[in-house]
Amino acid sequence: MKAKSPTSIDAYVGSRVRARRKLLRLSQVALAERIGVTFQQIQKYEKGINRIGASRLQTIAETLGVPVQFFFENDTEPTTYNLVSNGRDDLNAFLASKDAQALNRAFMAIESPAIRQKLVALAKSLARNTHPDVDVIHPETGA
Image 1 (cartoon, rainbow, N blue to C red):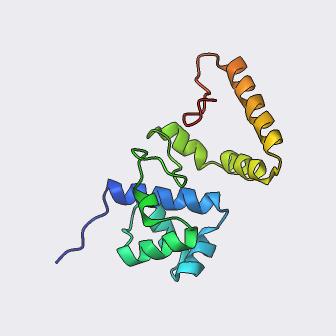
Image 2 (cartoon, rainbow, N blue to C red):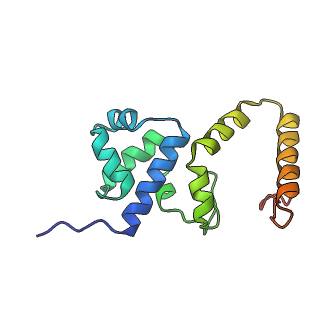
C-alpha cells in the first residue's frame, strides 16, 4: 500500500507549526530536539512536504504550548491561540514575519496597561493618517 501524499491541509498544519514556533522564538533545531526528530524533518513538516502523524502532532502541540486544534483553526471560531485573522493571507504572512514577532515581544514586555493602551492608540493614529480607508478598530472590543 502506497503512503498518501501530503495535501493542502498538511501544508496548512505545517504553516501553523512554523508560525507558532517562530512566535516562541524557537529554532527548527530546538523544536526538533524537543520532539525527537531532525531539524530537516521539521523543515519538511513546516513546508507540508511530510505529513505529521497524530502522536507527533500531539507532541508538537504540547511542546509549543497549544492544543492540537490550534493547527486546524481557520478563524471560524477565534481562540486565544489563533494566529490567523479572517483567513487573510496578508495578515497570516505578517504574523509570521520577524517584524510582527519583534513587535509582539516588545509589546508583551510592557507591564503597564496604560502604556500598552497608549501604544495601541498611537498605532491606530498612525494607521489612520497613512491609510484613512483602513479599519483599525479591534474586532472583539470595538475600540
